[in-house]
Amino acid sequence: MNTPTDAEVTDALKKGLGRAYVWSMAAKVPPDCLLQACLSDYRFDRQVEEVRGSWLWQLIVAAALVDQFKDAIHEALEAIEESDAEAQLCQLARYFASAGDNRFVKQLRRIVIEKPVQEGEWLGEEELISLTGKDGFLAAVGRHGADLVSRDWEWFDRTLADTAVEKLGEESVIQMLHTAASGDNRVQRFFEAWMNDRDRQNGANKNAYREQLASYTAKDAIQAAEHPGEGHFCFRAWGRYATDADAAVVYDRMLATVDTETLRRYLQVFAKRPWPRFEERMLQLCLHEDENIRRRAARVVSNNRHQKVRAFALKHLNEPKHQEDAIEMLSANYEDGDESRALDVLSLPDDDCHLHWILMSVQKLVEDNPKAKCEEVVTLVYEYTPCSACRYSMVKLQDERVGLSDVLRDECRYDVEVGTRELAGGPTWKD
Image 1: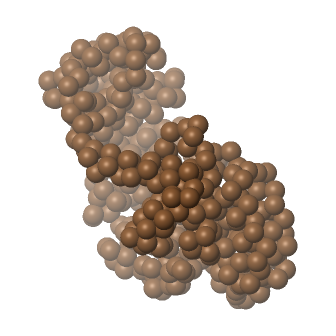
Image 2: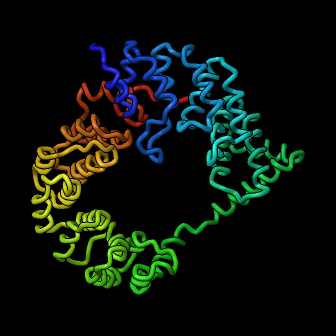
Image 3: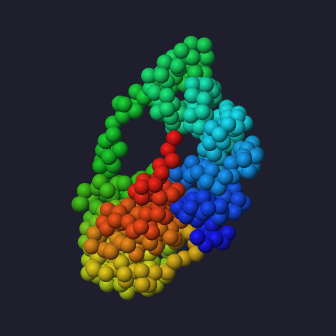
């Protein structure tokens, strides 16, 4: 095995590639690179990708760096409000605590009770409950219950209750809250708020939102698009449930619109539904000088199969400015070999966001078209995408269609994404 460069190691750590674990086992990961990964949140999309503490712990153990890292991780926890990797540090704290360092239990308890991170009300709670069970849960409940004096019930309150139910059992949680509530007003306040929330959740009308959208007409959508200051209107959601007749009325109105802001709003109506009919103006909007309009128009066009859409896509496929849009249009207008046509001219930008978007367009091209050959696209996406969730989707696609090669399987076995590891027969690393 060749020794990777520091740049290669950092790239693998940032993306969460399986080779980072293999290199750790072979003592080929510089400690400074791994420590920096522990102290930084390298995830590309925090809303989609899993927190990496569990994966990083496996790398620390594989590299025999537990003792060398523990003080630095503890110092970072002491100043957690200054970190961008708060959740990751809490996960790592749990593993260091399980390895016998009680300092990390104390830090987690402090974080749970003091809430030093703004908008991080949930931090450390799952880890403290896992380590200390009932005591950790009641400590967290006490802080939430105290805060509920001056605020309403929030999603993170529900998350605390759900986490306890998952780890301790619903009957046990209800019983310990019932018992503790008799001597603690904070616990009583939390318990009552949780029970009320459960009643609301159980009685919620899941179709209410859809029914509300369906009550709006084309007239309402036009009013909202052209006079936006009169209230909030969800154009994309309304478009999904609008009648064909209403959608056609709005489509005609949009085609006659020249105001930039109004066009932006109208285009959202057709982001998730086919257009009523082909109009040349839609292709013209895909070349608009305003990037927002250009992208939204391309999204609308890419929902539809039409020979002129395909011709437009092929004409602009080799232009970096329009390449992503052109590939998306080919997805609904696919012909054999389009994936190769796209790869032959693909231009990979340096910016991670733009890189992610253009790779997603190629990914969608093969996902939406079962006849497309996926192996070369999977290799490209796995190596270059900054998003571990996209990497999983591509690996899953190849596994379902043609199976994983031995090389790809070995790489995926230790990927940061648990789903990717499971597909390759690797360890789940679940508690």
